[in-house]
Image 1: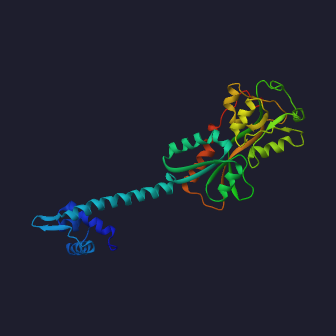
Image 2 (image 1 turned 90 degrees about the horizontal axis):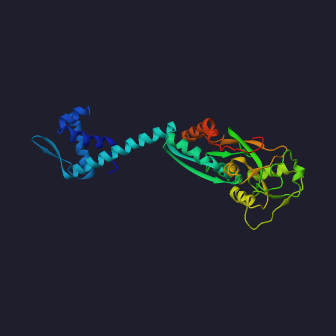
Image 3 (image 1 turned 60 degrees about the vertical axis):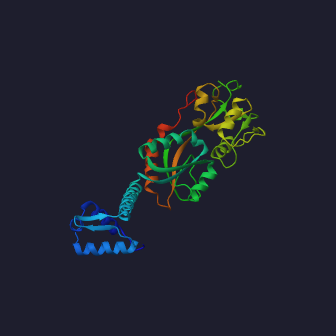
Length: 309
């Protein structure tokens, strides 16, 4: 059986279509003698008679009919293989793994959906985590592309700006500073602050922003490991928080949260598309990176009612 080849497959098909060995030989650009030898070798390999020789030509036996059907399946598989390789080489198909920091979940799914609409054959895997987890996934090769607000410095990466990423200070609408203008960071001394876990990009930015200002961190039993839990806690009046403006667009528009007008806010960062420089990108990854850079900004949430935004 190991001696079977694609040539044997085309032999079965050619004879089945032509109905005679002579005509099949002409189709295959072979001599009748050479084709006869190939048929014999094929029948010896499978230890079955595939053709009946009749006065009117060659006729498939039951085994021959099964061989013809199998040959067509192999032909389809070869065609699918060629199509898959072409799709991968052009970026139209293949597997792609994209990671995003948790704050990016407010726009990344729509960006990915728009990309897949242009390349439906791509098998895209998407994972979300905090910054440290996303950087680890990029380092370990679990993802090819990362969407992040602060590119890693501990490995060689390429970064491409996707769009603006403002950070604001949010409070419930009944907060004493709601509607105030020109606040200084010192005015916030003694305020109860909510913040993300160590390892998140938002927490690092908060630490830089608050500096030496005396703050009162809220001690709660709930784990503030997500932007959603922070938003809910702020709306409940438990404290105020520095957070990505892209995470609170809906709540600000609905009047459930307000952005405080504080000097040096908003902090304007940028979203980046990040990939390693020491590993070649797959065509699908290159296509996604180009799409995100050229189209990504239109998927960022719009923030209204935020002072200076």
